[in-house]
Amino acid sequence: MRQAFLAEFIGTFGLVFAGTGAIVFDQMTGVITHIGIAAVFGLVVAALIYTFGHTSGAHFNPAVTLAFAAVGDLSWRRVPGYLTAQLLGASLASVVLRWTFGLVGSLGATIPYTVPRHSLVIEFVSTFLLMIVIMGAAVDAGAVKGFAGVAVGATVGVEAIFGGPISGASMNPARSFGPALVGGTWNSHWLYWVAPITGALLAAWLYRSLIENRTA
Image: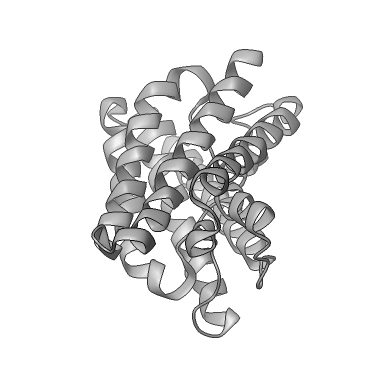
């Protein structure tokens, strides 16, 4: 269990440090661009899945952890440790970025760029689709497991490209929590918990129902 918690801590640290770091660096240099930031998020997720998937399942996301537990793919006894590791990893990444570069670009905090309702929908649908891909590419017994990192990373990157300008394309409460905590940016922060968690729960339940109906 400790190995899994450490993997979640390091993985979430890496995700937030690289992803929100790209936002900070783009604010400083202007050379990374929106597409580049999305690519960083997608590529680092793919790399971390291949690194830690065999140790913890490579969640790095409280919404994914809760969804797996809800459908029986993760013991509820592990959930508190997973969530704690993820939130601590994300927060430490933001602490390092602020200590090194200052409060640049709000440390990559996710905030609604239009009305909150738009971001709520984008975060819900994006996380729903992400969780569907995770279930199909990494959990389903019929999946080609070697391609899980590519499939999930590509999904994160694509959704960051189209959702980023509206909501910041978090799809991950820990990714939003770290910059908000360290940078003090809490604008409509609640929706970055509610939308990803409900989206992931619905996706996992629907996919599990699909598998059960397929094998019945």
